[in-house]
Amino acid sequence: MTTLDVATIRADFPILGRTVRDGQRLVYLDSGATSQKPTSVLDAEREFYEKHNAAVHRGAHQLAEEATDAFEHARANIAGFIGAQPQDLVFTKNATEAINLVSYAFLNATLKSAHGKALPAGSEKFILAPGDEIVVTEMEHHANLIPWQELCDKTGAILKWIGLTEDGRLDLENLSSVMGERTRAVAFTHQSNLLGTVNDVSALSAAARAVGAIVVLDACQSIPHMQFSVNAVDVDFVTWSGHKMLGPLGIGCLWGRSELLAAMPPFITGGSMIETVTMEGSTFAPPPARFEAGVPMAAQAVGLSAAVDYLNAIGMSNVEKHEHKLTEAALSALTDIDGVRIIGPRALNDRGSAVSFVVDGLHPHDVGQVLDNNGVAVRVGHHCAWPVCRRYNVPATTRATFYLYNDLDDVAALADGVRAAQKFFGV
Amino acid sequence: MQLESLYQDIILDHYKHPHGKGLAESFDSEVHHVNPTCGDEITLRVSLDPQDSSKILVSYDGQGCSISQASASIMFDQLNDQSFETGTDAVNHMIAMMQRVEEPNEDVLGDGIALVGVAQYPARVKCALLAWMAWKDAAIQALGQEEGK
Image 1 (cartoon, rainbow over the protein chains, first blue to last red):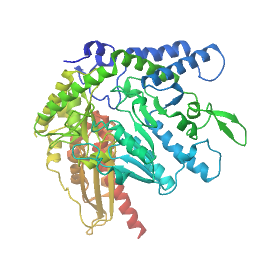
Image 2 (tube, chains in turn yellow, red):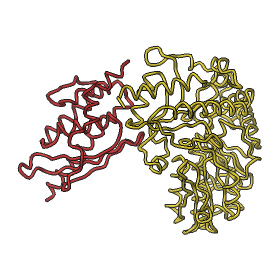
Image 3 (cartoon, one colour):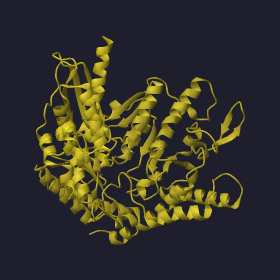
Image 4 (cartoon, one colour):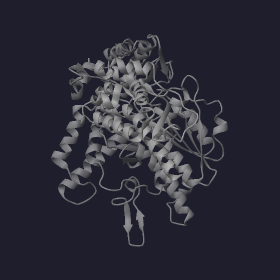
């Protein structure tokens, strides 16, 4: 049925061999929250600690050299995965921090400018005035909403957003009423973590370019699941997390256009991000070091690099095709059940593998509990996208997300579990 | 498997036929508590009983999973028109039962002892405690206002 040899892939993921809830096979359908890790990623981290561990970019001993080499090799490999140059890739603790790094560039440039403090050349693009506008969408994860709400609260800028259609797409009809000459930044998700909708990046970036706005793309749910190149999109920043793409926890990524990164004041400050320091003041290193204060997460970078190797060997277009088939099967199996309603696009075009649904008469928490009882791990709740639940008048949803190690048996287990929940609660 | 221990019939009865649901028009204090990980919500109002100001009247409305809603219904049965001391004792016992440090006591919790299975599922404990914590918050506020008069 599929382009991937799932049995072989599953053997690479030790955790998929364990059982849950009294000896049942683990059916892991929560990769949208975090993916599982193959042995090669775990081994890469372990090898770093066993053979090369040292604080990178510090010291001149052999281990420090090896650790620094491993860290910078990882940066180059991960940058290459999205067609980028290593110096344009900043490591953060997660994607949330990566988005905050950009929103704080605006805040810090605005504050420093107000006090007449030195800023990098070109920083005026980040200086906000009251009444300037930031545009997001109604389908954003809280990580790509709250940093912008906060930025607006602190600067007097105004937050505007693109609404959603009934079938879970962005409502682009009234784009001209949302974006205008005061729009300074447009931040949007590539794929909704709740709805599964894949947005038209070129349409949104073209509209943003037309008004001269900076474009920020949240690619947390796209880079792990599809072929992606920064050269194929016209955006200024791309943020994503390592742990959703088979990599370790504790590492996120920010890609930015060189000239913009160079024009941004730092976010988190301290060691390693400086150029010169006196008691009166400091100057800062060029990117990416300017944005990587403190001892960085070298082992996680090495692990994420191994995840990139694993995905490259399989091929992202194969991953995408495989997930597309699973999504088609899941949408079909779920809509075949009376009382199940998909929250998000039913159509397969421009759609990823996050499948959210509600069951008439059952709260998502209770559906999730019965699924868990059957060994099926899904996410329940508002998925850190509470405004999306409000938009569709549901308190929460049950969400299944698929990845390269899932198969049609997993889809069947999901549908069986939903029917079991209906039977148990008598709806 | 273990579903029956979590969802005892008595809980499902309270979920499908909640007791006392609906907000009273007059009240001394109102609180809105949410379970931010899943969106369970409760609005709870209390007022001091005009017949006996040592007793606290309760009304509530909310939405959420079966555990949170059944627990709110049971909370109403146990705490409506009870004193602050009796109510606080029940809330503390409910918390202790969820932490598995006290055995269920039907004299204190009534049907609430059926929630004992929730203690096996840490992710659901907050659902079970939502209404009870809301009552405590609202009661303290109402009594504080009374003292301030």
